[in-house]
Length: 624
Image 1 (cartoon, helix red, strand yellow):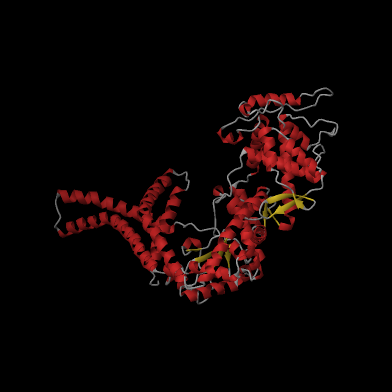
Image 2 (cartoon, one colour):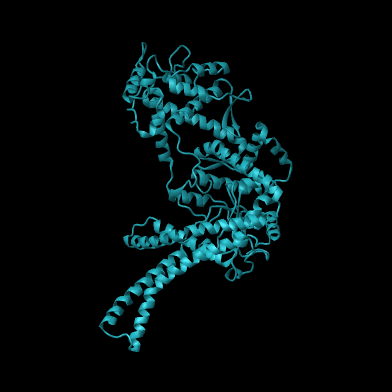
């Protein structure tokens, strides 16, 4: 460990944590020490008498119980598997240039090189200790300049932590920028190699893992009671060393930053700007582009390449980002990988699992999709599925097909049917009467199914409206018909998701059968085992509200009508996701016009837009 002030401060905090561990051990040994003194006094004839005999009979079993409890707690702390971030491991054969760059960087910083490299589908980088026996044996073959080299070196010397790199960095950053960003991260291996700091970290991680073990659900009452005691002791020790452990990490970070100042300092300032830009592009790509595909059972297999396209599009639109596009002529960091396409696919699959909770491997209901096929296989299909769900709900409500001279006589689904139903008749949509009496809307629905002259429409009996609860507060300010339709859509979608959700065991079986070969250069980490009930670990967005669901389904129905009657095509916008193209150009935003229909029951702005683009709402549309 170097002479940086931060490193010295981190060592001092580590010693405090180790003193807490020593005190806990002393407390556990104290009854045994007293019992040994009493027994030795009896054997020597110095501590004899009724009082001393009673003390021996009382303290000896207490000491044995305390020792057994302390041994059990120590065993749980030592054997509990510490948490490990789910990553995509990168073998040296799959990225020799990347390993070489990291080793050169470690040599310049005069710190041990990381023991391995892994990728995470996030815009962050860190060091992670994976030396616990539960994490598996170390690699069989390692280079001499990597910490822990040799067949049994890991038993004599501490193994350096694993370097985890955000996969978007490899595709968006240039090689020099990546090296500058990783400099302070790699510099952290120096303080991490100090025995005191490593021991303090192991102790804290063991306590944290023991708390997780004690919190796991179990049916056996005996094991629950035993582990409850273990968890109480572990939490007590964690509270005692929490502040010191946090200060330890701050000291390690300060020491690493101080040591890395001499390496690519000027370039690192520029590279930090790229970190913020990559984060913005990655977040936009996941929420606007990947999430709609994940909800349909498809996962884009080139998310990292999509980041480059998204940020390039941002640089084209934003004047502040004009200089970023010129960087694309330099060598990207993904060239350091032997097979960047395979690595990107594995990282994309892991991103879908973390942020959406998808299966661990491809399957019949969870297949990859290329960006070139995204408009047809995701956008078009998503719109038609939503439009079909909208008409199913209208059928269940007993809403009659659209009427008029141009309406189809077959009762085929049309946009006019939706617009006519949501159009607020005179006096119904006043602000003081909106969404206040759901039963009143049911009567409106009954009246809308009664034919006015001609043959009666054979409508099915309408279902009762779903109850309005506190979760539907977002529907305030909408017309009664919009509120009722939105609530029914939310109920229908929840029913579909509940019926389509696979059980954890079935998901695990399918993912095991469909997982890639173990010898592939970007095999998903087999050690990253998660509880399927806890997925997604990092949800991108909260569940959509009923108002948002209604707006999405109306947009889908309008886009289907545009594609079937006006020659529009589905498209992909790298920053905004699915989009509608008319004559090769992106159409105007529909959100204000749709909100006017939902909140006021006025279809005039929307019908004017439809007429402008030549979309005929009375024509039937194709559903799935």
